[in-house]
Image 1: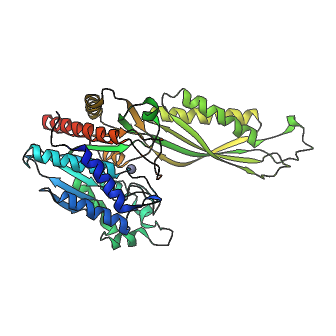
Image 2: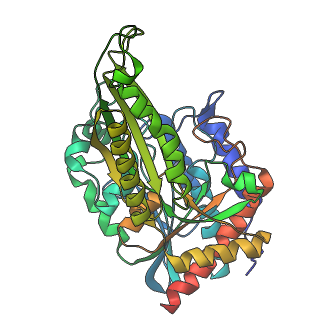
Image 3: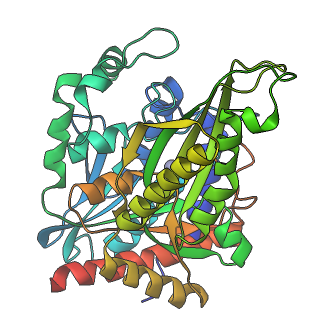
Length: 416
Ligand SMILES: [Zn+2]
């Protein structure tokens, strides 16, 4: 349903207004828990106060705006006002400002009383730019924040996260009380700039997101023997680098047959690391990502098997150490279908794609709320950079399509 009161051009104008207020020549400066972030949030609050909504901050510093409906069952729309330092002008705030426009449309269409309750959340510190830990507000809300780890986080000036939170009125020990906000939430929607080149390469403005990738991150160390580069015949060497190097083309083969996974060897260090010695020890890091859990496990097993084969061929040993892991977060199938439908009604063609980066939506999905995201094309396929951009007509299209999705999701909630 097209509604005359939706004004996507206003969203574009407001994004520019926010940029004027919170960016400098190096890009957006809305780093969480800083004065510029507080200024951005105060500006947002003024926009929202024009509507008959209730606004409050929760125990984790997330801001919730509620338009009460005839039912307590709630459609939740989310985004984040915070940015990385020298960030792009759309990452996070596009989602929030599209949500503001949708609240306006719903308010006017239903005379202030929609059939279900509609809420907008501005998550606190999605980026984790200052303390090195992303998804702070949403992981506190989902209950997955590791309190012991977070308690010890320190910024580059030596300030602890709990002290920085105290400055903005948040008591660290109670941040998980935020979780009560999700009760009655029947669906969660998040719009985001893609931050990669998939939609750009397909020449499509919008895509429906299938979920966020699971990640397996490991250090793989090959152990050989140091030997003189002049006196050691080639057939007598235990060359740790030779075995490690064979992993490089192998991970392309593993990713290639995985139906959508990606693998990266991001670093390689050698010992003794001198020009006159065969490498005794070679440590590489391997990052593997896939939307499907079993497929991710298979990619990992194949990499392990290959490493053992190459070690045996080279007469060296290999050891593995897990650095980090997170499970895939598939989104809700019915909401993905509605998102696809909203996109096709808006611009004719849709595409389904996974998200490589994590988003707050992954935490909401993890908390058991049916979730979907919509991506809008990213020019240059780049984000977390001042050159991040999206064509203005695509920005307008994404607000229209996201509004259609909100409408469909409200009906979906009513029918459940
Ligand atoms: Zn973001």
